[in-house]
Length: 385
Image (cartoon, rainbow, N blue to C red; front, side, top):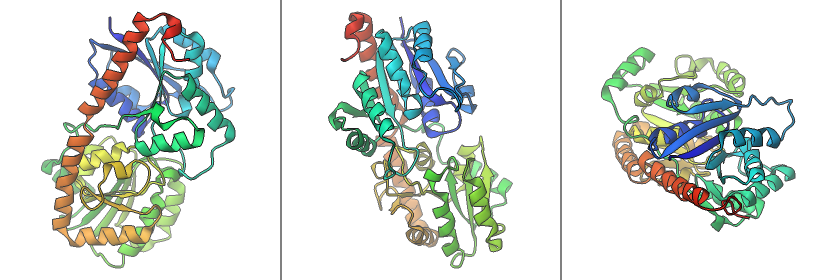
């Protein structure tokens, strides 16, 4: 009998966590694992990428609802009857309490990233509830060592009790494709000698695309043939649009593309990828860019230094430092041989350290160990006290 896993997430919209979950489910052996995906708030485009045999449930929680939905979650967990409940991030953390209340399955909780700057203060009640959830869970995971250490420091929960499984990228989907590059650049009107800088991600404050725009202010007076394209949607779009409109000289240079379902082709059209986030777990978009063979420039925060070896498989810059970012962009535009070397090493790094196969194997081992315990042990022993 396959191990039934109930994955609980806040939503199934566009995002690294949601994309990673779908990649994981698609990679796990369907003869060994059965999946139910439970969205607390809403579905979204990633729901359409799930296999047809995966059951999807949406609670439809509203902001006006009572913030803790333990009773409703417990009822739904009982109905699904999983061997394992796996909740991800703060938006789904109450599933830990609901599953522990039932005492009928193993519980995994994982942290995939932060909603704001890593230095921002969290409410005490959130820190307290997260600590309680960590204690109640059978296993606690993080996608980076930095994120593990941050939550250990904030909650007082021992770092040695938090396992790390890095995100993985699908090298069969994201790879350098000359035909896709030519086609996409032609569609977007990007000339062969035009230096295309790209960003992909939700337009949220934590992604700090304003730093990319401030870097563009500096490169505009140095480079003649350049373009900055940002793909994604979010609450920061009006602010970014206002800033762009204040620079009429950027017409034909800076574009907000909105949401796109052609990320693979967009990445191939770029010459360099920029990730300016204030904080990150392990960024799926960064891994995808590296797998595509792009030289990358990322902020020195969160899990980014675990992915990018500065000066070898990419470049790092201090968070919010538009001057340094501009200098690095100018250097890469002027040194195609450096771009080629960073590109080659980026591909090697993700294949060796951050492949989707490695990620899937790690989760499969975890789920099998917990699933066997749950099936073999008495219910009261299936979760750690």
